[in-house]
Image (cartoon, rainbow, N blue to C red; front, side, top):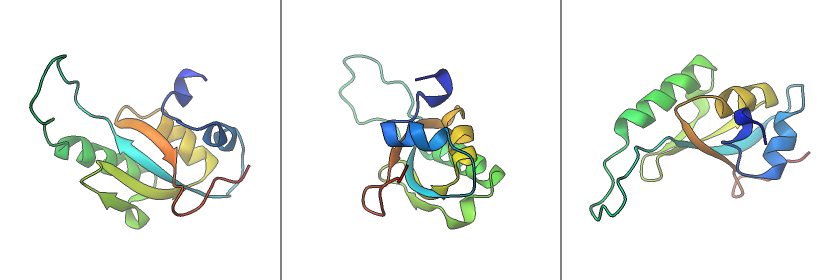
Length: 108
């Protein structure tokens, strides 16, 4: 995978990102989490700031209005085009992007 696609956690998403056009795929976009020191036993800090940053990136791409926010998971579920997926995969606020198995698989 290229550096742009490090966030893409499934081969079908890498394939989808390489396409053009306006087809959409439902994905789960996880906000980047703060680094945890090794051996730390307390719960991780809330990721409110990271979720806000990711929401701003979704707004920039015109995706925020239809995104479903899950604060507990630190993620958004949204439908994206291949171009939007490529842009999100290269965004520093993104930890990982996974197919939304519940909503529907990515069809290559």
